[in-house]
Image (cartoon, rainbow, N blue to C red; front, top):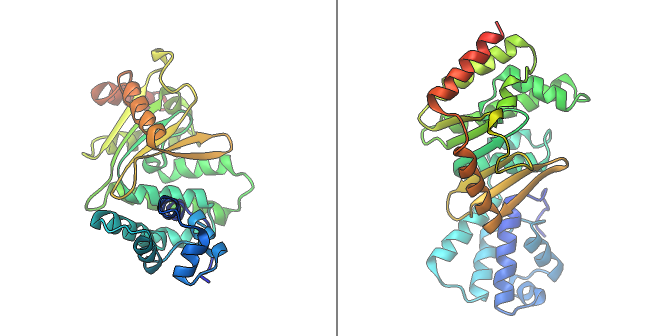
Amino acid sequence: MAAEHAVTLRAQWIGHQLRDMREQARLTLKDVGDYLNRNPSTVSRMESGLIPPRVPEVLAYLDLCGIDDPRRRDDLKTMAQDAWQKGWWDGFTPDVAGTLIDWVWLESRATRIYSFQVSVLPGLIQTREYAEAVIRAEDDGASDDQIDRYVELRMSRQRQLEQDQPVTFSTIVEEGVLRRTVGDPDVMRGQLAHLRKVAAWPNVEIMVLPAAAGAHASPDGAFDAFRMRRPYPPTGCISTAVGIVVVEGDKADSLFRRYDRLRTMALRDGAMQRLLFDLEARLE
């Protein structure tokens, strides 16, 4: 039997594909188990994402279910490879929750990321000092070593913005995020200066939703939306008080539409830069 890993989003994705294929072919777990030389409970765990399937198992599923479309076969083979993919983030897995590792993986697979934030700046554009202040405030029981690991993970994620084929990142933050002094005035000045710098990068767009805008398209709070590389669907992540909710399909599409509506109300370019200059000057 394959060793069980922590359940990841990518393992759940391919597991759902396998289950859908089996059900459409009107096969039982025992039918698949007999074909794969696995017991039905193991097949069930694969379809639930508890055991990421290997490429040969996925190809066997495809054969048994009569799927011969080359595009579908290539897509599922890619998903099987990704389910076992090792990345730079694996060095952090003992220190962080599975949900955050899923988030890091989504960033690594995305072509475009859209982020609306209402309390803190997105991790991809935080300075080290700002990140440390946010993390310490959020987890006051963590040791200094743990804090250092969390900060290092956040800084490592920012490589997505500077690699050879960088992700396109667009964010809208509520004005109150910029007016909230995180850390101390020196930390906040450094953060505002960093925003002015990265806003000039061709793959980064930073906008501010002014307080004067009043009611807006996301009264329930923050969210992130990812345009993914094939074979993955557009994906949304909604921040809640108890964690992150991942959505796909129509629910993900609704987040992209919500972001477009927020964009029409946001300050950008010169107006945004003037606000950053003004806020930075007030901290002197």
